[in-house]
Length: 584
Image (cartoon, rainbow, N blue to C red; front, side):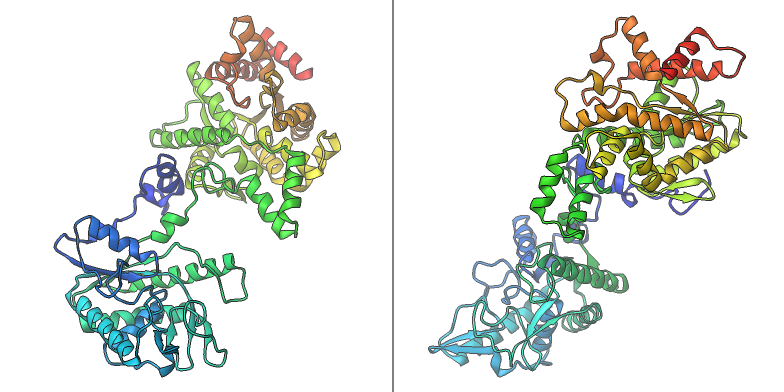
């Protein structure tokens, strides 16, 4: 396979191997631990937003030389500042520490002879202004001492939103929420921008190396969402903006700095997890429920309306086991690329996991084939591909799918049109039938429903089939109709069972219009299996979607004899039986 920049990348560079596999196995992700940059002899300090306290606790518990503040009460942090939500707040305290800033008088609030420091809202009131200022200087002296002694500073940035007074002093909390009184003529909201945050990171490093030229910096972004926002946005949007801007700024800064690194606290909490109903099993593809959730918001439907509509139709498959099986088949196919050998067969399989299992059935019967699964069925139905003048189409859902298709396409081209291309593109009936029913809001489809849906939503699947006919003789293989044998069907299975033959009738017409042979090997394979006293439980998997290896072995025998029969005058008895089954 030709070289390209993604050819030899490590597993960490691909979603399936870098995220999906370790998350599914409950293993750690292969990110560089903070501890790799630490020595037991290091003196370590930390600070930042509320999440930063966990770092101090963990370092102390693990026996590192951690400098904790004596001015923070029970809080585990290195500075007596409480939560330092923004890098701008840290910058101003460093300016104070280096004699570059004096705080405005209105950073102090007096109430009934109790004095509160708006710069340190976590502290209790003091009995005089002088005591407050004395405490403030004690915080500064301890901060400088810890910075001078430390080898490493680990700092967690949490927010972009700030409250400031007229002089520009940053107040950790809005006056009036914890302490003080809010005055709109004195207190102003400001949401920091990327350029401001980046400049503050640079300024902080410059001041830190003035205090301690040897100090190393490790930054993280707090994964904790905003409790509330003073912006005009929904709090979800405000949180995403805040974390995104901070993450982009710290990433840009760390890439330029020789003295700073980044640890992904935010990403480790924020990534998708197994069982998230918004995603398919690969944790990348958006599930049907996720799409419906977004579209419900996009079209102004209340969630109550949206949920009730989904429950009334109740036609979406819920069994994620199907996607899990397909993912395993895909990775197995991908792993075989390294074993790629010269093409000594004229049988090429292109489709979803049904084709991968059918390919295994061929190989079990000692019939050489190439191909199998190219993409998940959901990748075909949900347009996780782009059309390509160079290779018909190009998978976009994963690097594995793309590599599999490039390899298979090149092998198919090498046959110079002298091959049998077996495909189920256009079927994927565990998704397509239910999706069409939901689209039209019906339980029973008409031929017109299916044809109209294909015309509007599946023209490229038909185009792929058309273009495959340029490379060999194409055989369209119908999905197995196993739902008819399943008891206690859920609503999704009932809908698929009711409409399966209507859908297949449309696919027959598509095949006929394109000059493609249509095969229904399922019926004959089942007849042969039952004749050989094989029970249904040994043929159909529990999900009612896939067959067992035994089924696909019989199915492959039917398909192989059929395509070989097409190469000579007349059909064998088996081929005639298949033809009769097709006609029926």
